[in-house]
Image (tube, rainbow, N blue to C red; front, side, top):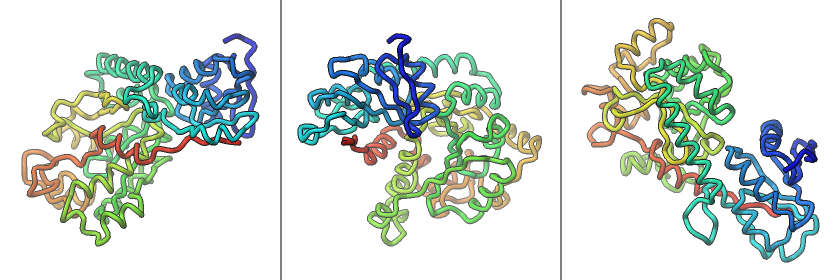
Length: 367
């Protein structure tokens, strides 16, 4: 790939030729959000390598192959990371080729369940990155962890917040670093009214600039919860419908997610590290090591408003049908009272994978 690369803006898309350097393509993609790779001839294999390198570097926008391309090249284009094609001379053979999107899940359709090489390399590099961040920040304060995360995953990071009893701390720390980082809120349509009021109060108080509200799919909700009482029959399926699936869709644009999980919550959270790799994304837990006394002290120090239900004995707040005042040793003891549940499933990668798979898009043939 040499210096003769051509780079030009085409109607808010970036078009590059197969001689473009990957770093140039990535910089262009950050500006346009979509990249066309032009094949000057069907024998030019550089476009496959370029696409794989772009995907391996973390690019998640649309990647379209254009130019002199043959239907017989469909499988190679798919495996390399392209999710759309626009041949210069469309023919009925292209329609029969059935080009179908596969790169997002890293699975070559009709082959094996192993990820393609470019995807495997990208995930291995992400795991090494997490290990390095943990070595560097195992004892760092929360704000340093957040700042390092925003720097490391710039443009591909979000915070997941319940706007619950302890949520203001993480949100305030994020606002000190960068108010523009997206904040994802799962509106299950079963929240306490106090939580929704508190959410709006915190957004205004902290000046958060990009809060994204994720809701259940209306058709799925009608099919699975027609009477609105699914939580009484099957609380796990209710969480799948109202939390796991919307989050799976909302996370498609992100490689890293900041959480408010803490070791003091007990259960599976007692061994949390600042950075975790779940096989797909990086989960960042900047306040994992802070105990309840430390949280209370930081609330006072930062003059943060308290959740309205705190005074009523709620140490952790989720959906109203499945939350009670806490009377146990850990804050989450009031969640799903009367059962052995302690998690809703949103941090279960297998569930998230299923949610993403359900939304898998077909690759488009653009003729």
